[in-house]
Length: 589
Image (tube, rainbow, N blue to C red; front, side):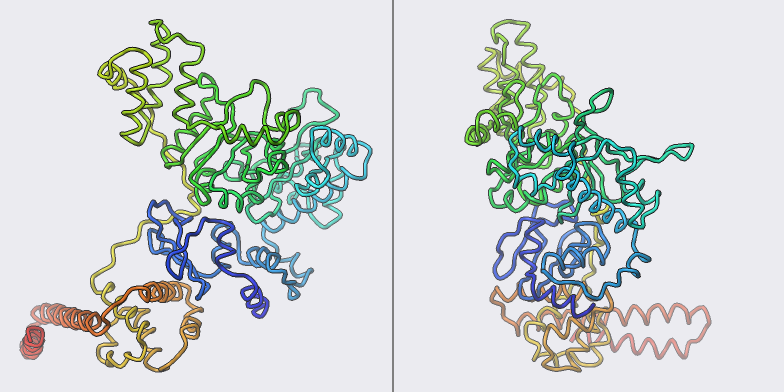
């Protein structure tokens, strides 16, 4: 396995891998971004191409290689990350024993395998069955091209109670596995049947492109059945955290600098086919804070093509409120009656959809126009309705400049003084939206480091820049350093001229120490870009280090003297006092 891991690392560049998940920007010889594992405004997440490592110097202090990143960002175990990166690198994992793999699969791996087999079965049914061919004709009639159908792996679930389940059981999965993966339903009386029947199937993928769930649209049997049916929450699929199409759109979102958000799967797929590949859909649920946190990794600009009826869609307004709190730049695609994006592309052409997206309005302008629509700003009753609709929006604006601008504009439109507008706005109560955060990717705040720890780190960073100066650290001073810096400097003393890569490898067995050393190496690398006076800097640090060491020794002696006073051992106390005074004298020299 070790050789396969190294081969994967040799074929993949950390910047390319991480760029598939977060937006990186150049910072000297490194790259930086806002950390995807905790909320922050100032980028503290750095990626080192030369080290092929990443580290967050902010609120979570996490770091590691490409495997560690994929494990954390996808919330998966090492074996799953290995498979994802092996596939990306084109490396065949020959070490995997299929029979042993079956015995030791985790619940997530079992679920993923069931979802993948189900997707292949649905694809086959779409191509090879009569009912499937009819649903295929429906899809092409809706404007989908053959290549698009294949790319998005669209399929068909037969009008059968057990065809899929029989297939999965024949592959060695039990009923419990199939139910847990969301592909079957089990009821009292030993009733067990396929969840999806007589439906066009849209596979839902995680950011790595792995099938984790499905949306099924009813086809051919529409009596008393829901039009759309989604996979329930499983160990892999949570509709409040999965965004349809993001695996295909993330790179284009980053390149284009904005994301188009639509409501339906077909809208998203047709948008991609029309060339607007920075489009995703939030299907089967309202837009959540979790969705927004994920999108924030790629862009801070959102173009919404939702049902934006101000009087009706409270879920959309709530999502917009959260997005504004997260400082997204939001614009809105104008509504075209009953038509959705898929219909516009089919009947009016892809260029028309491009024009519509380009004409999207900033969210504040959209809300203002919506409040004014079909109302007379000179009518007293309509004035009140306009104010009721628009003032809550104004009150939630983050920028004071924005707020002042729209108060002035509303004042002009209604012919009411700004003072009266502001007075009316004060009486409006607006609930503050609490932005949801992914608890699996959040970390407690770090404790503040002591002066001693900071000095130790600074000395280590300087010596990593000039390893030939390691002899400045004598044996007695070395013993006073905190771990793991003590171990790092000890290795540097023992192995003079050791390569940094080899130095890092000595700590790989200890994850906490490895992460700390990785952090110091990246800090030293960033420090290379600045001119420093080494002799001056190390002199200051070593002087401070010696002073701290003396104070620590004095504290230790003082504590021992207090204990001896209780015992009445005055001879020993006299010796310790002499040592204490000698240390004080040294400290003052």
